Image 1 (cartoon, rainbow, N blue to C red):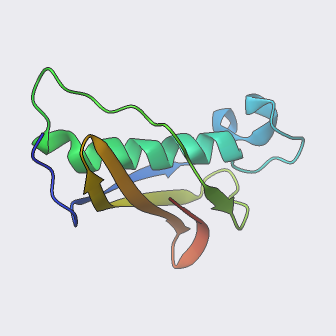
Image 2: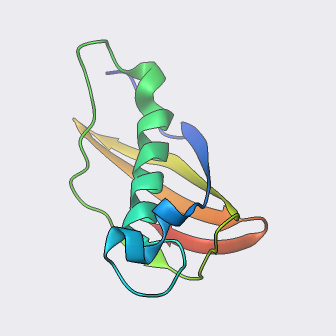
Length: 109
């Protein structure tokens, strides 16, 4: 693995009924489920480092700190960005943020 800090990727999701809290059994309010948002952020981390991994290498999430700051309704486009901040041996540390338009809906590490 030859990943250097600064690598970044953004992935986008248009929220559908399958992404809502009731569908994920994480609440009753019809907005983007926090677990689905966490998965989107993890998808961005994988995309950020995929180009620098060998075919025999992969990544595994160990810890996620995520503040879900605002709701996103069906039809909203949410973009999650991950930036590789530190490489310590095999451990990769990322900063993640998700936005729907200019509004910050989540941030974490």
